[in-house]
Every structure is written in structure tokens, then in C-alpha cells.
Length: 154
Image (cartoon, rainbow, N blue to C red; front, top):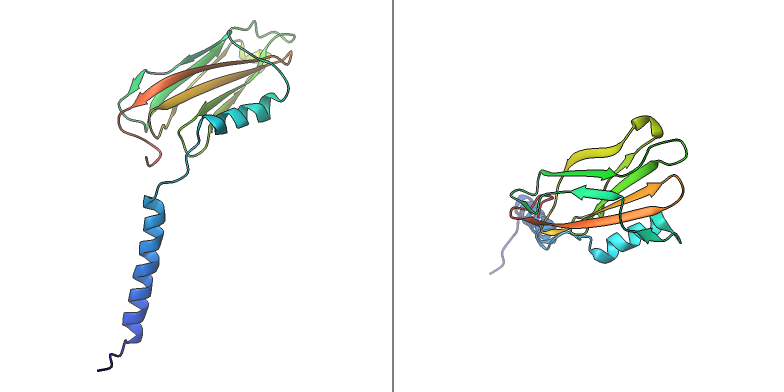
């Protein structure tokens, strides 16, 4: 007995297989950054300069109920003068699809180096803040945030 497959049945069947494969790829999990990806991004910015501790404060909750909106603020101890000021503060997260979350730009006209935002975190992970100063020095700090319900599709 020979079965004939009509054009519509063939198209619907093929479309279902293609859609299924696409969803399987999504369900398999998207690539996530890790500590090595953050380290590579920091190395790209820092180059051969020495990363120091101090001067930079990262404020983030210890536990975030919802990873879709995690409040984060950064501040850097700086006189913000023409000769001594913060140029940029980079924020990274080692469990998100991309390690770089945001960058804040400053000038002496800001008066103080402080910024606040809300970020998405896919899962429990470390958040890093890297400050680039006008004299070429760089400062780094980090904090782990425990996420109970992930953002970023996680």
C-alpha cells in the first residue's frame, strides 16, 4: 500500500520539524558569560596596567528577588578635578549572555563619580565594577548577588 503525502501536509510537517529544531536550540540554553569572559573583557580595557583595590564602591543587593530589575549603584572616591577624575566606570556580570552590562562616562563637570541603574541578572553571579581614572590607574571591586528568579531569559 502506497501512501501519498499532499503538498500541504509536507509543508506543515517540514515547518513543524524546523520550528521544533529552532525551539530545541533555544531550550538548550544560550551561551553565558563566565569569570573567564569577564576577565578577558577587563584585560581588553586594562591592557598592561595594574588593577588596584579601593576607591570604588559597588552597591548591589545580597539577594535579588527578581533578576529582571536589580538595583546597582557605583561610586568612586575622587576629587573630580581636571587633574584627578574618573573617566569611566564599567559594570560586568559573569553569568549573563554578555559580560559587559554598562559603562558610565564622567568628566570633572560631574562633580562626583556616582551612578545608579537597574540591571538584569540571569542567575546568581558576581557583579564587577571597574573604574578608569584620568591618571591611567584602574580600580576593581566585585560583589555576589543571589538571584531567586532570573532575568535575561534565564
